[in-house]
Length: 47
Image (cartoon, rainbow, N blue to C red; front, top):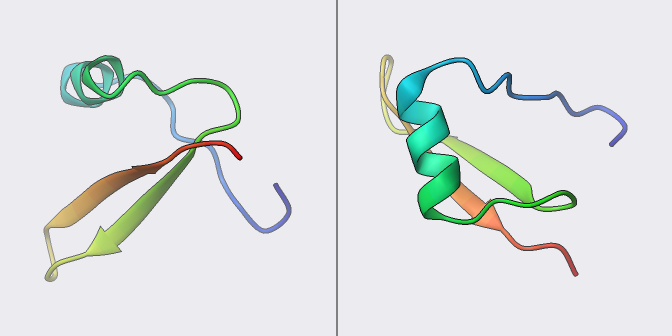
């Protein structure tokens, strides 16, 4: 993905979130800033 970045699956919270949503190769993760310190993750399935 040009201009993108990769999430490192290091934190327990991220690992649980990805497992609960069945994130697979090719899926995209949308990161939305809610405020200065909070973000929302959303999964966008691969086409």
